[in-house]
Length: 432
Image 1 (tube, rainbow, N blue to C red):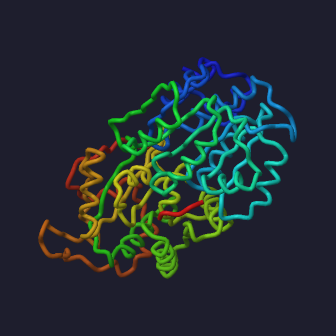
Image 2: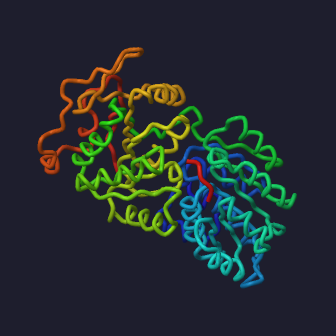
Image 3: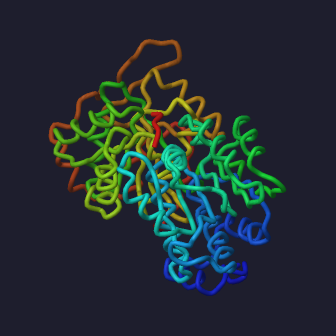
């Protein structure tokens, strides 16, 4: 199956070819024909499955075939609502790439920055608007945005928007949409609240579900390290020093925690940067660009970035803090092992986080292998006091690790208490 077989027009095929796309992913193969036939769609798929192209390509094609207006006469025909600034920017880049030979124009709006440039882009005329909920409603209330000409609307990462407290904003946006429209609803999970929300926006729809029985990316190798809370930074330094040239994304539960990790790593002469809701948009984008370009090897993020980072070749995700919502774990580790790539997800688990680990394992239907051979292992039996392993001291000269020639696999395996797939690898709440 190729994109041409799906009925994609030549200008988009040319753009997809330049992006290196040859064969559609399962969600693209299933979704694109439904959308080109004008049906509504409920898509259930984990991050990294290619769903942005699954909705962007048919939207661009339909607007192009309907001969859009030019210049300032353009009316907004498509609206994509997404939870975070990073994800909005990423989706905007995708629309630009796929539509580069069609003349379809898009812009991205989000909070945390001055609205002047965004308003000017709207005044110049656009076909596709990608927006976070807060800034969208703000500019609607100011009269800069009207949804009366919307023909296509996408709610992306719907479950994450609910997690971030956007439910009331989403309902206000839905109320302003024309009744005659094509609606697309994407979510990685389908809890009760999401099902109810989908009913408010979808009409006659078809459902596409990609591997629902598999909660995590199949090519992501997952391991967990039991470690005391006070030794987490030492363990992080230990692992990073064993992989000095890796691209590593580290998740912290809090903004303060992310900043603290950056300071501790700096003391160990490891350069990193943090992105979270208290950082300016410029600082966040600069850090993310440096990370994508390979200028920065370690990025510390809160869950605001769990679904908004798409980095080719991201080899390692580290959960410095385990999330208390198990679905968040799935989204975090989905930053690696994207599409056909492979990756490793490492989690640190202290005694208080053991219940979180059990919830995660229940969700993914997998016992995450435990790594016991590391300098900071903490052995805790259920209902028992902490008992640390004998080897609790850091190596006297950690810099010796920098010249190790171990493969990436061997650095993270150690002795496991469970079985793993050892296939070769080929390649806070906040408002925006």
